[in-house]
Image (cartoon, rainbow, N blue to C red; front, top):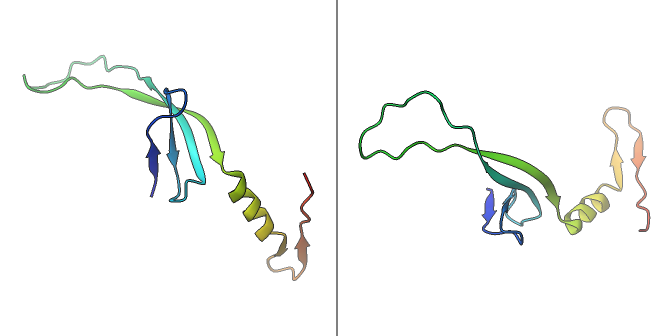
Length: 92
């Protein structure tokens, strides 16, 4: 289930975490969207409609999660060919 971090350091952007360990997330900002030009039928106690646009900023992947995934996939078997694919990690 996704969770939301309340405030990023800039205060204008939010992160929507994709997993429960907060290892993969999407950073986005919220901008006012175009308002409807057609009149809406509403009652006296109804709030006027509001429109927002989510602006994608970046995909966040924690380095430890990425490293763990690379280490787990160092040796993979290729589907129906019966061959083995070996991926060697380079030192950084």
